Image 1 (tube, rainbow, N blue to C red):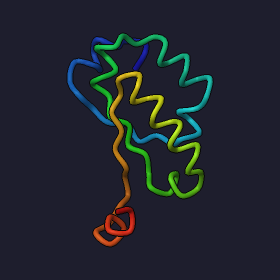
Image 2 (cartoon, rainbow, N blue to C red):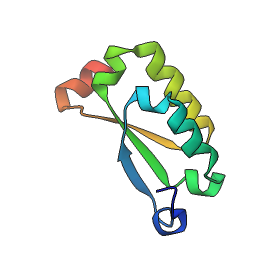
Image 3 (cartoon, rainbow, N blue to C red):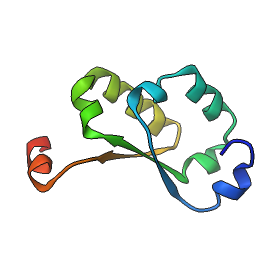
Length: 86
């Protein structure tokens, strides 16, 4: 993605990613190479399991990427899981 950003960031797209990756140095390097206009095209899909495995890390990571302009989607919820999240 970072090798040819113009090709990939023209339209919104989603990436399945985990909290550990969002908090990594590799992600920080990837993030540094994108403009704010590119970041709004990205939706990070994070599985609900990550929320339960590390709630503080999940909250911190999602707040940071949203501040940077990315969007976040909580993935892997069923109709009953959605009610439990509420």
